[in-house]
Image (tube, rainbow, N blue to C red; front, side, top):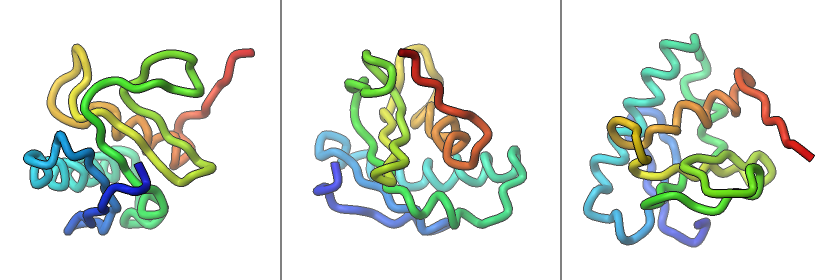
Length: 118
């Protein structure tokens, strides 16, 4: 994912990479990332204008992917060690695009804690 070209969103300067099969959706995705961060910031009272979120590369994929934390298929995951977030463009039974991006930001900003079952 880190080898994909990055696009910077115009509103918050967030870094986004998009797999080639979604290249025709690039403008929609970039706009969607900024819109979702704006909504997230208002809802969660985030006042850093995306400073923390800018440290993470948001990679957008087409469909579920294998997840190291939940031992199965995922639609969104944040990896703090690698400063990356992977989210699917559309998820099963979810509305609109990038349905889990706000959830992953909630992990970044400490509203949700990762629990690993052993």
